[in-house]
Image 1 (cartoon, rainbow, N blue to C red):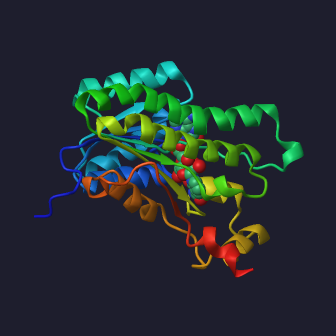
Image 2: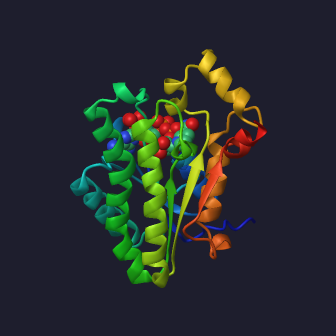
Length: 256
Ligand code: NAP
């Protein structure tokens, strides 16, 4: 029988009702971890819970808005109460509000930064003390290839670039406690977040795919494989790194 590389570990995954987060939860279950699946809406979580249980998971679902410090604190307490530890934290919850520079509203700026960046900060700040105490932890921040620059992504690219800075800082601060912190920057991945911002048949979407050296979109499962590896002891000497999973988009510009 296959023994999963995350057997006996407890993972907390934010934004896990769909898309990349859901794929990460399913991968963690396959690898033997117990999972705390959290998302902003209770109803969406209840719908996926059945799927997680069918996959064989020991899963706790808990609705929380990652941009609210008190809700994050309750989430982490609940996770500790239920499992006694959090070994892995995946800061995945994120939103995008595409707009050209002059059309970026203050409201959109605040919303994107508060979920994508402050949310990861709150979750890590609440979880780190438990990881430090057990002298073990793996933190994976889900950023974006857009952190390197993308049209109409002022707030989004700022939030995802900010996550790189926090990843490197936390890697330094937490290394003495045997805690690894890394950043995964996906390129275009087939999820609702992408298709809402980039309608399937639009010229813009076709141009994006044409610009990807591998000439296709990525799948949530492909991101989940990388996150699972970085959350495992197989990646024990990797910390503070940013890894882009984007079909070669980051090097694609070298064609020109
Ligand atoms: P998705 O399908 O929209 O899933 C994101 C999940 O996060 C949703 O279930 C969403 O809930 C939840 N969420 C939103 N705000 C939240 C909050 N305040 N607190 C807790 N949960 C919240 O997106 P995805 O494509 O899987 O993206 C996951 C991550 O990958 C994001 O950080 C995104 O920036 C990053 N990423 C995605 C792509 C891509 O092409 N898909 C590319 C680069 C980076 P609701 O649906 O109810 O809002």
